[in-house]
Image 1 (cartoon, one colour):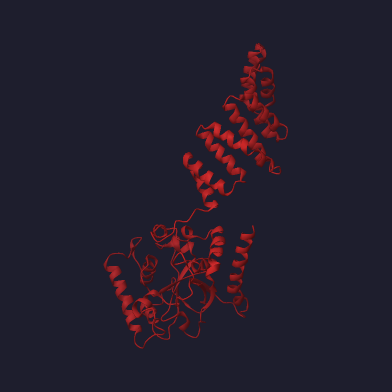
Image 2 (image 1 turned 90 degrees about the vertical axis):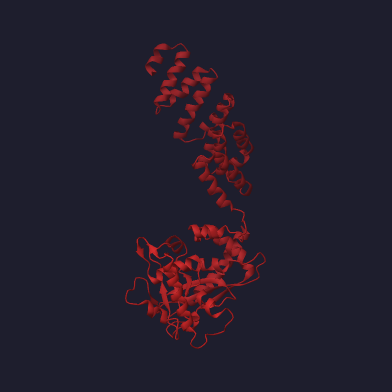
Length: 420
């Protein structure tokens, strides 16, 4: 609990740093966010590829080289037949967005509407001994030109933004676009600008960075993972799945939450052997989760390993007793244990559990319990008690049939006929 509280404190501090400046604005502003390593300049991959990584500023007349690179990239993309989309030809911006998605160097820079997603990217490490700080940039796009669905802006005009004074454009992938699953998961959009986003026209403000200290990254990733921000959720497509399983990626131990979810899915699809393994691994992390214990015993029963199921239940009776406020849980425990004992022909033990359960269970649960206890009484030859339990189950026609069987064994034939 203390560790989780510490994680939340760290997360809250970064969110306050990101949001406090927004609260000081006298007029409404529109902000987007990007997470990256602190030492990286806020420049597009295309600019770095054409002009190099180490330059401190744009050289005169070299913007034309960047524009020529982008044009050549698109020509090569189309000449290879990659530009088909749902039976039509991609627009130039769709083509650039597709190339960006696949890792090509384009003039686009990825941003997100969600500062938590940007924080996740800022916490990514390039090696096992990461000592690099991250950064979350907050960019003001209030007056940026939005290209999404805008037919009035030609692509030539867009390319002109790669020259001084570096106007800024915003591009949001449409919903019929091939990378929709990733775009939706990351709440993403692209910014297009020339040299650096801070060198745009006077209508835009220089993006504001918030430094993410390297020793805070594990804590932040832990809490972000708990709220669903992780690699497989932010990269839900095939390309993302393959990237997350490359040889450069560490094999992370699954979290207890993932183990439980995988166990429940395995149980639902009747992959019981896999479910047992996953439930056991989960319970090693969370031994006090009684519901998971009950689910594990259910899987053992389906595998016909009744002895193991009974051993699990009996070894955890004291833990069940601590759940006195959860009556349904306790009812399920004694009902399942009684059923397992009955299946193992320990009807005396089953009757003991059923009787204990009837003493405190709800009316509906008591009726079902009296029915199965009646079956155990019948198996032990106690016809009278069996009859009394079946007779009490007025809401079950099959109980009346069983009551007739008990009367038959007691020689009360006329009464048995009435029940039948």
